[in-house]
Length: 93
Image (cartoon, rainbow, N blue to C red; front, side, top):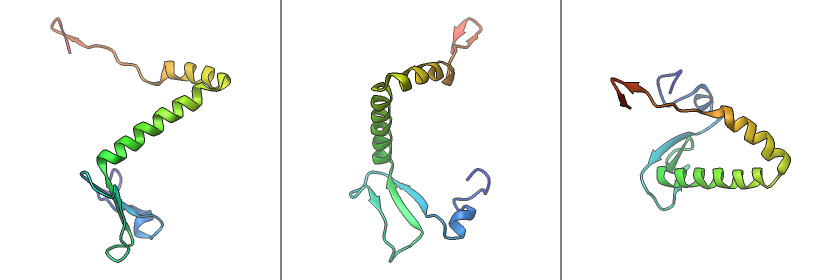
């Protein structure tokens, strides 16, 4: 979307990958029907968010179960993202 101003990338136009369409809740959570389109996969947004969250949880469990990796991660997390309150006219926003 960013560079092409459409949902079709060079790779999708050349058949190197499929396009992903997003939908609300669905059973099954991922739909692919090559009889309809070989280049389109539909994914449930709530299911995608849940899978992403589970993946992050498991990654952190695996990461912090190794002391050596945990030490490196702790140092990197300190620099990852910081937020600061903005004060405008005496109000924090």
